[in-house]
Length: 92
Image 1 (cartoon, rainbow, N blue to C red):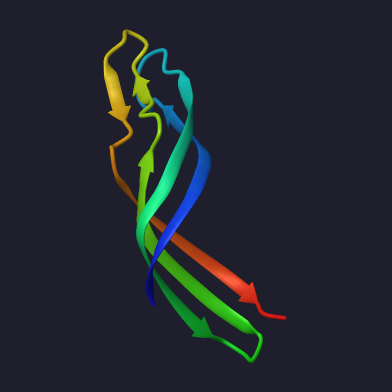
Image 2 (image 1 turned 60 degrees about the vertical axis):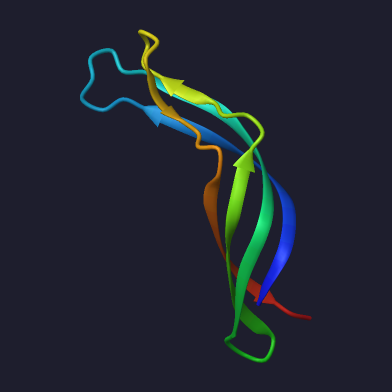
């Protein structure tokens, strides 16, 4: 089933240097609006148990960069990203 969907996603981005002198971990808050068409597949496992697979897009409110200590950006959140969810649902 494909349907329009909207939601709010809040999480954390983490970057940590590997094989870099004086590497430090960098954390940034991530808040995104999940808005677009969302595809959902519902697979019945037993009469009341289902596996739900959800695929869609998300667009962040802030595009937090993760940078090296000398200021050069290592990564910046893209304007639009994909999202994937896997849920085990118990239907009462």
